[in-house]
Image 1: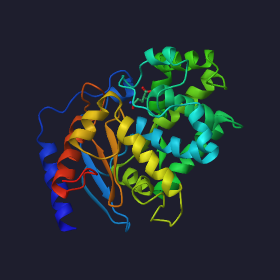
Image 2: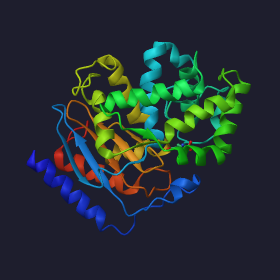
Image 3: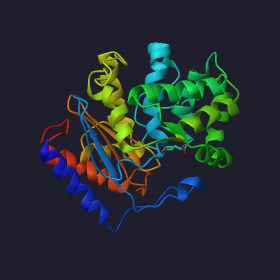
Length: 309
Ligand code: GLN
């Protein structure tokens, strides 16, 4: 795998010198403080080896990347009945858009836009207090990464709560349609805390390995989700993982991926690798600018796109 390490070093070297790095998320004040001059990448292989370059050991706010893990957790609890509450079509709209919710009577288009993830958080809350549900999500991610040091950044959670009017609007709107069962502040408490989980690229790449390995975590041997479910989650990531930038991401990178406004992206090369990349500066639709460019270069040089060379 020396070629892969060479490619990663080259990508990190180019990222270090990039002048146009995008803009960090400003609507969450705690994220606005993050230094944009950072870049990390990690590739986890099914044999457990992890190759890294750049700031791959620096924790960052995973934000919406968490939605892949909460979807996996909720599907494990509810199975396909989850799809009565949330769709699986690309939205073509911004991640925090409210317009479709009214037309579609409170059923979010997919589990990766904010409305959809809030609906999934409501499902995870069933039978629990918010604190227990948050604990369950953190434990699940620690189990996936096989790493008990993963934590929630409480300052980010507080910052999101204090500036969460937009997400509160989405949640109230859905509750008015009966698509959310629990009190809005409980649901948002779960949602904001899942988004505020901090992970390094190294940890995130390991956590995503089950999606590259037919649902099985090769680090522990555990079957996290059935193989068919891993395939379906990858399909939703490809179609919906980058919001209204999903088409562009598929065009440029050609892998299932999920972005977050912290600047992280988890991308899956099925059967080959789980890749985490992080650079805080975002493009106009809220996806990591250098992260996307790095994945484009990686898939091109390694021939990893699911659509062939
Ligand atoms: N916590 C962020 C929000 O709710 C997540 C958005 C994202 O990462 N795209 O706005």
